[in-house]
Length: 115
Length: 114
Image (cartoon, rainbow over all chains, first blue to last red):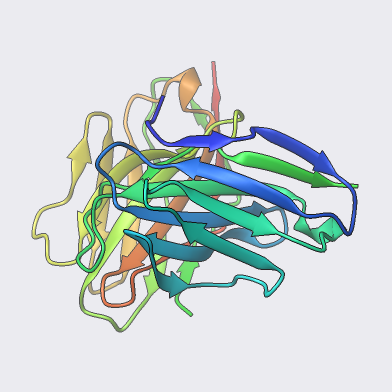
C-alpha cells in the first residue's frame, strides 16, 4: 500500500456520461497530481493541485475538471465521456509545492472503460 | 513540451544478469529531476530511483542504479542481478522544477527469462 488511495479501482460507463474519480493523498502530502495513461498517448500529466489551489495544468481536456478539497483529497471529474477517454487514471502525491522533492507516490490507478 | 525518449519498446534479459534501460531527455531548463518508475501488470506505478540535475554522483537504490550523463542528456537505468519479478514496464520521467511538471517517456517493457 503506497499510502495514496484511489477509488474506484475500475469503472465502466457509457459514452456521454459523467464520472468522478477520487484520490486521497499520502498523509502529510499537500500536492496532488493527476495523470492519464492510455495506449496511444502514454502517460500524460493532467493537472496539479497544492493545498487546494491549482498549480499547473497539462494536457487536460475542457470536459475534464478537478479540485482539491480542504481535507486535501482530490476529485477528477470527467464529463461527456468518449470512447477515447478509456484509460488508466493515476493520482500521485508529494509533500512539495513550489519546491518539489522526489517523494512522489502514485496510487494504484482507476481503470476507466467507456463503452 | 519536453521530450523524453525511451528507444527500447521491449527487452529481454536472462535471470540474474544485468540490464540497462535507455532514456534520453531534451530540456534546456538547468534545474530538473530524473525519475524511473516501474509498472507491473497490476498497473500500479512504483517509484524506483531519482537523480537531481545538480547531483554529482550517480544515484543508487539497491539493485537499481542510474547512469547519469548530463552532457549527453541521458539517464539510463541499470538493474543488476535481474529477477523474475522485475518483468514490467519501466518509465523514465523528468520533472522541471521551475514549471512543476512531469514528463514521461513511452516506456520499455522488460521481460526477465528464467
